Image 1 (cartoon, rainbow, N blue to C red):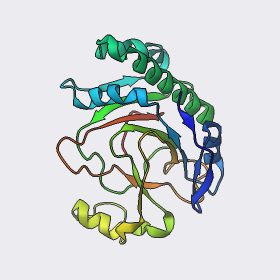
Image 2 (image 1 turned 135 degrees about the horizontal axis):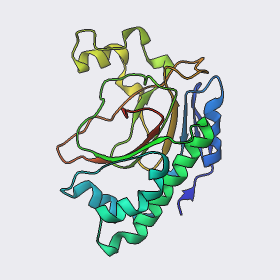
Image 3 (image 1 turned 180 degrees about the vertical axis):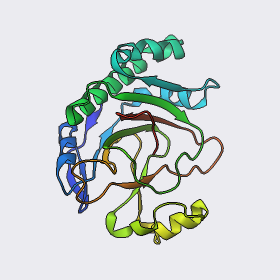
Amino acid sequence: MNSQIALHRELSDHAIEVGEARDLALIHEPNSNLVIWSRLLPHGLDPLLQHLRTTRESLDMDWSGRELERIADNLRAFVRDPFYQTAIAWLSGDIIALAQRYTELTGVIHPRVRLERVQDGGCVLFHEDHMALRLLCTYAGPGMQWVANESVRREELGLRGRSVREANAAMVPDPRAIRSVPAGHVAVFKGAIHPHREVGALIHRSAPVSGPDEYRIRLCIDDTSGCSC
């Protein structure tokens, strides 16, 4: 089981860090667009995560509806070594629990659940998601980066013929304002079509990779056909 971290801390006037899964429901507050559940992953998970990061096989699993019942079987088929079976049981249980938590938060009965190994920088351009609500957990590797509203120039969103580096510098002039979600923590955040986004959608991006082997193992849960972060 993961250890709980006792806290309830404001990260900005629209983002909060909590120590219990139930407090992810604070995302429904009109003045909130990000809630991060801080938690510690079990140490016994480390060998499995390292295996998933280094295996030559491509990890890209995608479930929805009743397919969620096959998560454990799919992971066991992907990692056949019995040494990892206890960790697989924990990981599959955590994924299912987070999918259920997403359903409780959104009412989406059959969310899309995706577990993947990301081998590049992903969406390194700061952006807002065109969706209502998304849940992310980076089990290993650098997590999502986000910026508080007061540090973003929303009028500069988009490439607009600029390079990614130029656009990011225009949107977030001070790189010291960029914050990261630690591995293992769970982030729930609002997108551009959330009905209660009085403070705007969260501006975020994937953490830029620093080398060719900086892979991450990422879980993404939402109700759309895509996954970007």
